[in-house]
Length: 318
Ligand code: CP
Image 1 (spheres, helix red, strand yellow):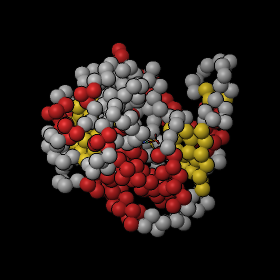
Image 2 (spheres, rainbow, N blue to C red):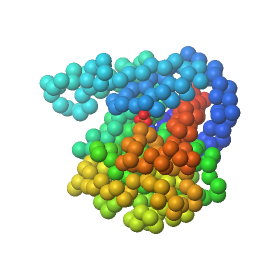
Image 3 (tube, protein in one colour):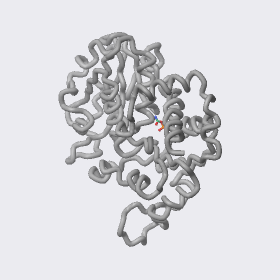
């Protein structure tokens, strides 16, 4: 594995899941693999889980870790090519990337969608430049369109809890006060299809995701019907993908909040969310605090997913 940006970088999901089991049973078994190797984590956006779990995973492998918050203490970066640099951004990403890359062996990048420029977001303008100009393996820590370390942790978690080979997994939009990217939902759908689970996506009309991630045949607009016989309910908010209203909020329809009444329609489904979560907007307290909630296990598996991917890259690239 050279980079980890999407499912396109995965040769075999079953091999990655086996590696996850191996690491879970002894996460320090490969603690010399990363000796004298440095991981640089670059955050254009805030993070709790991704920041901590990826640092921990790298440390388990014996790596050194440097963390850089671009908006706190670093020079503001210009990311557009050909502009006159007379704004408040004194450094261009074209110099910054190779400079940062010269101090490390692997780079992790978090760069969210702008939600104003759909074409630029879906071309992954920032992440692509890191791949092109760093000369180093690049790991997505959540990009404009995907969050693969989260999705891989989600699949690890589903494998732990599933009661049948091909569980019914429902991805439900849920209301949120602010416009959020589609990355987690896109990525989750992509990984659920790779794992060959049954995928049903439910949301109010107008919140259709790109058909590259969720073909129309997987959508169920009747939220209660979607929940029937579900094994996993995965909640996430996202803003509009459609060009006309890209990045906007169309509704905050509370019928899509995950509540105990709808959970009763399921096959004793487990409740999942990538966190952070808005209680009593996305999910009722009684559900997230109840025995069906596996959100903390999901978050814990972020260390495992990051360690599997770092191990893959260290083994194949150095
Ligand atoms: N789920 C997740 O990526 O959390 P953070 O934004 O806190 O990293």
